[in-house]
Structures are given as C-alpha cells and as structure tokens.
Length: 391
Figure 1 (cartoon, helix red, strand yellow):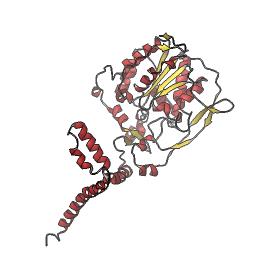
Figure 2 (cartoon, one colour; figure 1 turned 180 degrees about the vertical axis):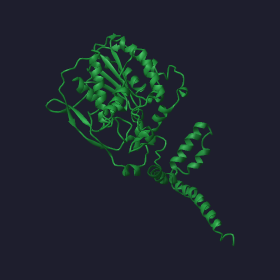
Figure 3 (tube, one colour; figure 1 turned 90 degrees about the vertical axis):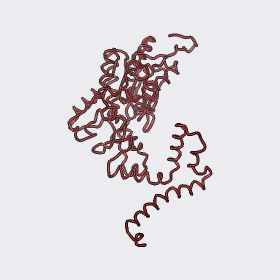
Figure 4 (cartoon, one colour; figure 1 turned 135 degrees about the horizontal axis):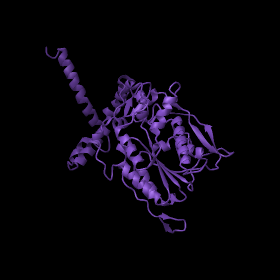
C-alpha cells in the first residue's frame, strides 16, 4: 500500500491507463462498425509486402485517436514551431515554399541519375522539337522557375541579398538546350532582372501562400514570350479585340492546403490576388481558346491558375492571346508538364491543324521530379478533315 501511495507509481499507472485506453476504445468503436475490427484483417490476407502496406494504411485511416489529435498537433507545429510537415517549408515574412522543390534546388549534381530515355529532359525536348519541325511547326520551351529559385531571400533571412538562385541541374539543362539550338524563354533571367529593377517598390512575381506565380509574374512571362515570338518572326500579331478587366480574388494558397489542417486555413488570412481578366469585343466576353489557333500551349498548373479557376480567363494563356491579339489553343495537365501533357497532345493529332508554334511550359522542379519522368512521345500522322493522312 505504501508503494501505491508513491507519486511515481501513480504517474506510471496513469500512463499505462492512457496507453491501454486508446486500443480498448478503438476496439469498441470498430466492434460497432459493420466492417468489424480492422486489426483482424492482418490474418485475412497473405503477409506479402503489398498486403502489409495496404493493411498499414487501413489501420492508420481507421485510427480515431489519430484523426482527433492530428489537426491539433499540425496546428501546434505550424503556429509554435513554424513546421510545415512533409511538403511545406515556412519562410520569412509570411511566405511558404514547396519542400520537394527546395530539395531539388539544393540537391548535389551527383545525386541525380545518369540521363537515359526516361529521365533526360533534353533528349525528350530535342526529339519533340524534331517531330514538330518535320510538320513545319516550331517549338518554344518555357521552364518556369521554382518559387525558391526567384525568392531565396523570402525563404531565409540569410539569403537577404540574393535575388535569384540557379540550381546546378537546371543550369546544366539550360546550357544543353542552348547547345541544341532549342528556343528557350529564360524566365530565370527575366524574373531576376525584374526584381533588381523594382527593388525599392517590388510587386511579387509569386504568391506568398502558393507555389504559383502572381498576376505580375503572369504578365511578365506573357510579354516575354510575345516579344520573342515577334522578334523571331514566328508569329505576326492578329486582329482580335482583347482588353483587360480587373478581377481581384482572395484565395488560400495550395501550400497551406497541403497541410490538410482546417484549423490552419481558418487562422490564416486569404491572400489578396489582383488578377486581371482578358475580355473580347464590345460585349466583353471572357477569353476562350480556339481550336484553329496558330499557337498551341502545353503546360501544367502554371497554365491553369487564374485561367480555368478563379477568376477565369486571367492566366498566362489569355494574357499571351492579348499580347499577340489572337487566340490560343491549350492542353493543361496539373503536375504533368514533363510527359503527361505531351501524351495527351499526341493522342489528339487534329490539334496540329493550322499550328505554327507549340509553346511547352513546365515547372523547374519537374526536371528532376516530373511525373513519368521525360519519356519520348510519338506524334502520329496528321489526319486532315477529309480523312487523308499527311506527315
């Protein structure tokens, strides 16, 4: 009895009681569920690696204690420790960054796998360029810098004097593309110069809470592409009557949504985004793609933001159309800028009709992290409207 009155024993018993309470409560909850006790599923399948992983995920999803405590722990880590979990890095002055993109930027060149047919962006781009050239179509490539490549000073105060950083792998790819005479829009240079010019009263080129560029970044990229297309005499300005219309929106950025913690969403003030729509004619109709356009745009979520989500017709595609005074045609695949968007394009040969230029956009981190790598895709013979084949 004397031992039981010892405070240490009381704490031990309390701790053991808490440990026992969680599995007991979990079992009681699952007994009332039609699917029964999840732990017993361990004995219903062969103990293969695949089945064990599936069982682990199911066990984790069914854990009520985890569901209840996880949002609170995430909120505590975010609010007190400035920890963003597996995908988010909390920067300075309210800026957030995508952790996989940062890891790509900081990786040593020797950590990347040797180039081969499925992971080398340069050979895939050259092959695609040559296939288009055989059809009389020119290719322009536009790698969009990672946010941290342009704003290292918002990532950490230790980089306060930097206005841009070029990752070793990115530099290697850009140099090889230049050597292969691929036409590249160098937004790394354009964005860095814009930051230097506007240092006193800078308008950010990227969103604070999001992986994507701001309307200012969209405008600068569209102007850079339009200027280069005209310099090369690849495209002549059209006659479409496009105008601009302010369409500001407020949004919680994708980086905060990656935390999957509603408590954080409620705590953070949505970012004010001064988006600008492109409208056409006296009726001010929102910009829309045209299948018969001379320019095809292939890209990822950087082409989607503001364009097909709020406020609509305010993204890069619409702004390039306004700069060139002619409509575009586009295929956009979120996260699929390296290979998926080309596969979709190759599956629709009729999109080649009337095309003079293909602009291919992909985000910088896809150089090392692209979905499906950098596979070579084959353009099929073009089918004319009369059903005749041509190359």
